[in-house]
Image (cartoon, rainbow, N blue to C red; front, side, top):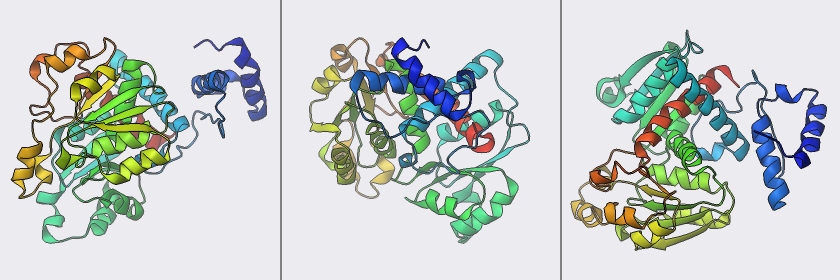
Length: 364
């Protein structure tokens, strides 16, 4: 990246204050981009931080997206890009050789588990896997805290999926080793949100000034909740909420967006929203969250479908994303269009999770 002349003096001053050269600043690109934003928009920024190679990662666990600020997000995406280069050139690394990751899943989720396991193995580490709800002592009534205290002795990091909101936070408070939340009930899915933001940046080229349509089951979907939190960290973002009445976005997220000054609106017209957006983020209606209320599930299912007609009104640069699994909410004839980014999105999960494992276990 070429730093404009009007930014060189600022970079030089910061380097002198830190007592290092520009080449020692692993966050130089992030710094230059932030300086460029400041010179263009005159936005007041409280601090500009860089991260030195070998420095300890700021977070002990990854539990919710509120833990991240823009500086850390940008730096994580830089590391993810490095992991992408490593994976494509050499098919892996030995940087985590000798480390052991435990995947503790109380809910079945094949893609997330395989993505984490692949990330660990591509990084040279080893994996232990447990279908915790069905086969472990949890079936006998053991508390989550007792399970965590026991299994942390067998591994260096725990990746946990749970059906209860807040379970990941309880696990992190108990464990002495890092815990990564791979989704907890209707709560959050932070690594999915991170890979979603990484995908948007890679596909659209920016995170400021974008328009995003969140479509489908916005009440049960932890992915859209987490994504909304992260989108709120960026400037001039517009969010459209498109969903059936029975699965509308919950008030806490809408209140948060308003508090953060994010422009958002609800709409019932998918085509109109799709024509305006840089990103159409489609989700499935989650039948497992409805319990015995199958009538409400049938009312919500299939109301908003991304098909060739929706694709036809979208802008040429726009993309369609989906956290998977997909049912019928995106028709298969959309898959061949270059704007269908969801398989690339899934692949990006490998790079983001490799980055997180590296940062949590080794640091910057």
